[in-house]
Amino acid sequence: MKKQIFVKPERCTGCRSCEIGCAVRHSKGKTLLSAVLQQPPPMKRLFVEQADNLKMPVLCRHCEDAPCVRGCISGCLYKDDNGFVRRHKERCIGCWTCVMLCPFGVITRDPDKHIAVKCDRCHKHDVPACVESCPTGALYMADVEGVSKEKRTRLVLAEADAVRSWP
Image 1 (cartoon, one colour):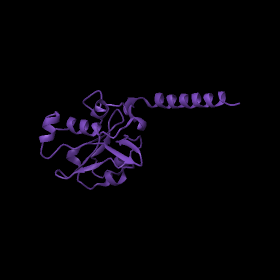
Image 2: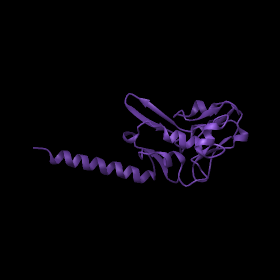
Image 3: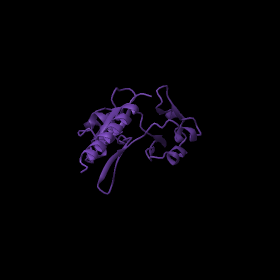
Image 4: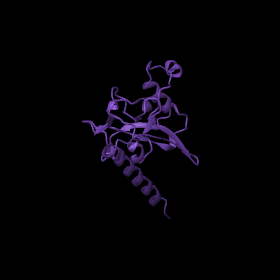
């Protein structure tokens, strides 16, 4: 699978720039002004949520064994050659099974078209709009193995600092 979108929650300020960037990228005119004036307004495909003092963007993880794809009774949702969950919007029948099955709650519905809406990873662009528009770098792209190795290295360095501070 290509690079994934990762979140550094400690960097998220809750500014919602990622939500705005997503909506603008999916608008008809592709500019902020045209998106603001568009009726109905363009839909975002990720959500900045807050619990206690933690703010964090929540978006489609394009699961390897995606419950939404397995449960889609119309064949609307499918995995593309890169492993991303995509949709054939003309096949969506508005049953909302995918909404019920998504463990992250990031599949929503378009109330005007009565179809499921989800992150498409801005598949016609190299960098997704949410990553591109994040001013703090809370959203970033990386390969899974690299992120895992980085976390292990930070853990070892923290343990080494703890050992050095022993009396």
